[in-house]
Length: 78
Image (tube, rainbow, N blue to C red; front, side, top):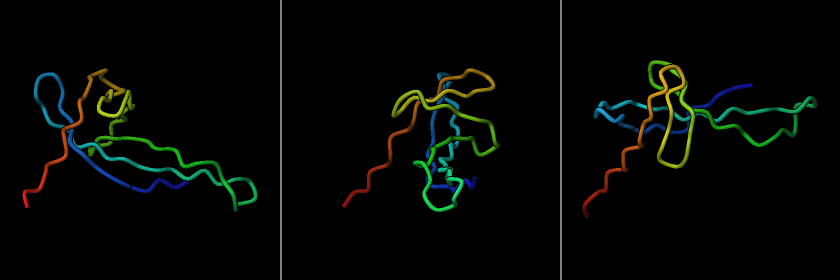
């Protein structure tokens, strides 16, 4: 099983601290090596701590139980 970095974003806790969250997709090849199940998406902090996704914008740090809220993507002015 191989994990590939597919995205990253920032999230804040209730005290305003900012965390860099990395999004990975892990492939799950089947026994024949050709057709596998859908990739599994996992999340980790840049320092390696595991993060569980609660909903689209809310995440939970597994080790400490701290809730993180995803920062909105910056908009680019035209």
